[in-house]
Length: 283
Image 1: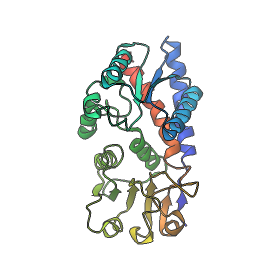
Image 2: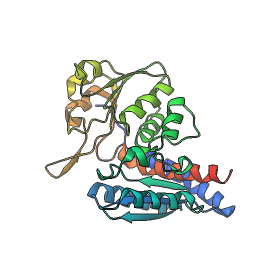
Image 3: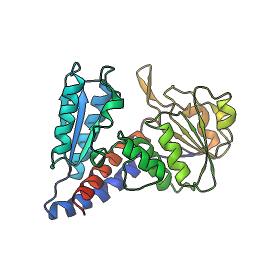
């Protein structure tokens, strides 16, 4: 059976480093602060919010939640966002997505200050990701994927990597980040003719499709590294996009769900708040 790539040691290592960075910042009179913008009260937003606030508290980052009513108008939403843009005490802004249908993300993404946009909503940060410009903020979840690969010493240069899923939130940025590390990339999506065939040639397989236990044994090459980004609920239990029990024997390494990528994401969020804080204070 392949090595289980647990997220906790990765998150703990990042957290330890960030605690020291925050202490240094506070010694200079700088207090990093995160503002979370939530419209309504979706259970998955509340769960992530709880984890993010807990992680920030552990590290020493101040956090606040701007809770907005579900029926808020776009004009009022943008007004709240501009207040955060202009508040010098706020260094990072996280907007929970997807937003309700009456709020147009295509308009809102141009309103968030790019230097405070710690989860890559702004086209400025999307462009920096495309360019491989480290001064931007890539999305937290694919960044957590890359941190896990780095922590477990998975070599990427020249390797064949397949990403299943092509969303702007995980799939596309994960593919770009793997490409920036000089892996050879394939991306599978809903119109891919034979996803299992494409995936079965991959040394590294990243799965972010949002379908429980979608990836079976025939998708996985012997000795592959499998990163499962999916979080699904089946019969009251959390599971990923990969059939863990059916696949694990073929892999060299595999992430579990829960306890894998998801547990690293809030540490990346905190890391981005501190990076934003340093950039805004010219440190």
